[in-house]
Image (cartoon, rainbow, N blue to C red; front, top):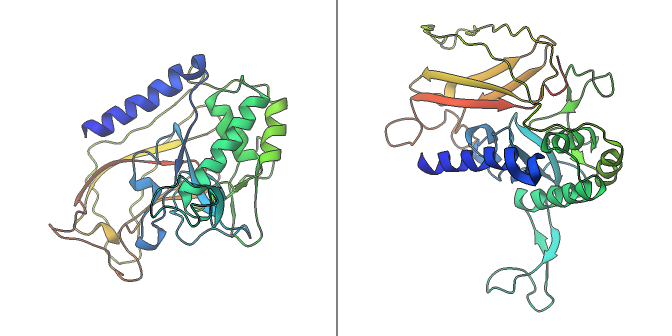
Length: 297
């Protein structure tokens, strides 16, 4: 927990003080564990609102099967069989003699692509706040036809909602779009002008319905005039088999964001892991996050 505390402090310090108050831009890989039932919302770095979580697509624009999904994946970029320089280390790289490797694959390949795009954006407009960078990436993304997309209730950009899915976020970033939009961007969105609102419910003693087709719901009312960027939901619940549970957040516009979806469940483990030796908690005290309501009121 000490390391996690230090990491959170580093993120907050970076966005508060980095780049003379404009905020350091943090880019992080979504992860390569979709096949094991993993989710970016189960990890502290990827689900922090200070971080841009990046998924990986292949050359056709389809999402890589390994790319870890999550409600807080912001965008994606190409991350399958990429060409990059070779560090000339034994066992690393396909062709040490040439100095290049042609099969660099993973979200760790996609994240540097987005980092490079961010560098171009800041070259075009050094005055962008770190929150501006996030928003421009959202607006500068494309939506390949070989992916399935949902549309949220945003009305602040194209008046028709923003398209997203759990693996790609708001789409595959187009570098040219991002740079052009940066050149004309007038806002400066930082920690200083960030606003938040919250609602809480304590002392709940609701039992989770067990296989009867019903759901346990709780409604929170937040009556503030603001456009959403990030939504965070802190939960405190107990259940003997977390792999049974799905947690969804629904906005007034009807956008449904899945924050937790049967953790550890996959094709080989249809009921997930449980028990004292599984490493899966029976008491969940956790903060989930979602970017999928971006631009909604």
